[in-house]
Length: 223
Ligand SMILES: C[S@@+](CC[C@H](N)C(=O)[O-])C[C@H]1O[C@@H](n2cnc3c(N)ncnc32)[C@H](O)[C@@H]1O
Image 1 (tube, rainbow, N blue to C red):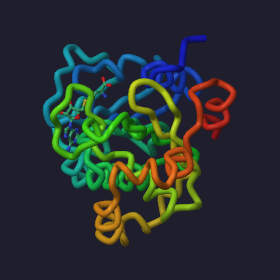
Image 2: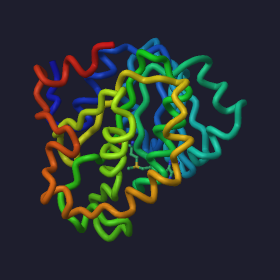
Image 3: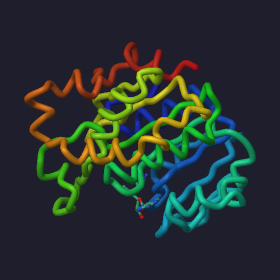
Image 4: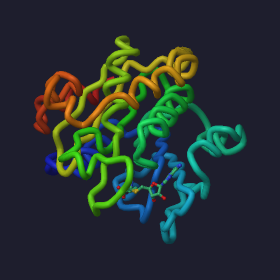
């Protein structure tokens, strides 16, 4: 059993346990998180500036933004069917991540799982919308707040793994249009949130935080 105290460890374990038929990764960079995919999984990775060298045969890298990917049925068709597991790790701004999650859900299997990186920010500087630090989570955490507020039918939990947390979303409903229909209002609402609200309101309650231990994580990965 590998360590799940980091997001890489947790992602690796998710691949080992779920063995998804189809996996979508938004934001592949050099392919480190892609390397946890197990044999038998069909993989589509999306990134406007991918730096993945020699992807394996089961992997297609689409050099595009996530918005361009979802706007093109031919590109989405590369998945070959509904997504079983997705990892959202593209542009770290709440409005983009909300769009990514809404689009992923629309193309997911109802028993699928969406993982969102960077949902447990360290401090105001690394959570700022303008990047000035090496570790940068941006304001992705706000998407967890939105999902918990506007989609109570989903199970949305933030696992406290190094360095900046990983949210796990399940109970997906590909036919639910709330995130698409109410997108503008939700983004506006999220823009009014500040990093300090996490402390004043209570970070663990706002983000549904659980420790990165197997007894807490295993039920979240069961479909
Ligand atoms: C933090 S890196 C991903 C790291 C990778 N998932 C890993 O853990 O090894 C973020 C990536 O998102 C990509 N990106 C930026 N904007 C994007 C967008 N609109 N759609 C998809 N990917 C995007 C960047 O090019 C970058 O490679």
